[in-house]
Image 1 (cartoon, one colour):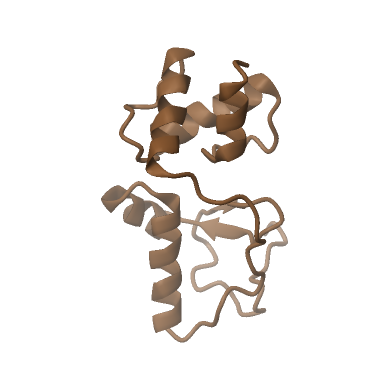
Image 2 (image 1 turned 60 degrees about the vertical axis):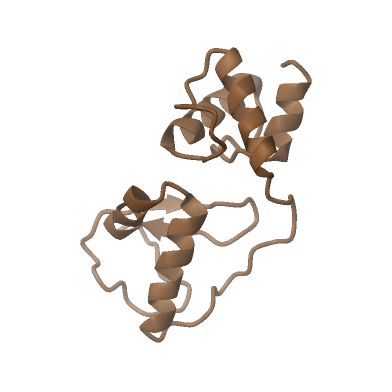
Length: 139
């Protein structure tokens, strides 16, 4: 209905299912995430984990690798860096849901709100090193 088609050209397995577009990394592949993605996240709130498990399921079903590769770029923040991001956001009044270094929904919402407030693009909720650098500047 919206003109979105799978990158491999095959039809969607459930064309009437509601889904939303998600681009986890600027310049990287785009995904349509639906009910199964969120079911996986109910077990482990990490988007990376959910994507890995969903992709593994696709591979088991005979699907291939991602059509568009992820760009090499910003390294993943360490546990200590994630905890620092959460502490700094919390100190600024953003609710991260805790400072355990686990990026769940609350942390993503807090990061996205911070990105929007400070004009940091993209405002995607990714708790990366660019966000940490801006937080350290004292925004």
